[in-house]
Image (cartoon, rainbow, N blue to C red; front, side):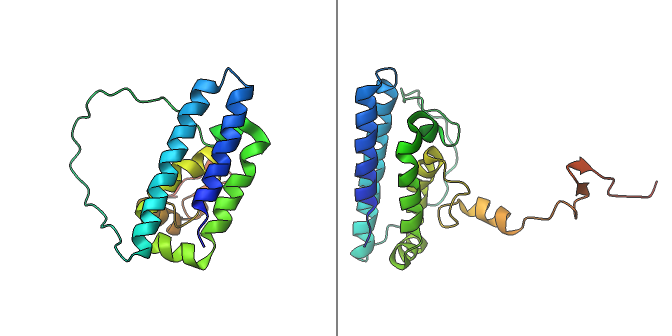
Length: 168
């Protein structure tokens, strides 16, 4: 049984409590609280569609067009920034999400609905889950990770570049 909703609502409760205690972080944490609420709603919708057998189709990549100027909240971009701001209070939520992704039903869901990975990826980055679970990684990133070449083969030994060609 999925518990994305339970995990994310508990995380939002911790964020709300911290925002009430620390007035310097209130504006940022309220924006994050809303973002996590939207993530939970999107995941809930995707799970409901998946269970009903109506998996949404993955859209083809569109040509990039210039975006309109919109006012968007500026979230910090550093990995694990939420973990740094809130400390030990949010560590458990990253671990719970990782454990949830190891369940058979959730693995099947993630395999059939790749859009869920796009929803969860920013959350895992906020919480400092490193490395990202395989099923949440973008396909290009997963392909690169699968074809990692050892540093010795590339001529990098001990962090120092060794000449690849020994001839002149």
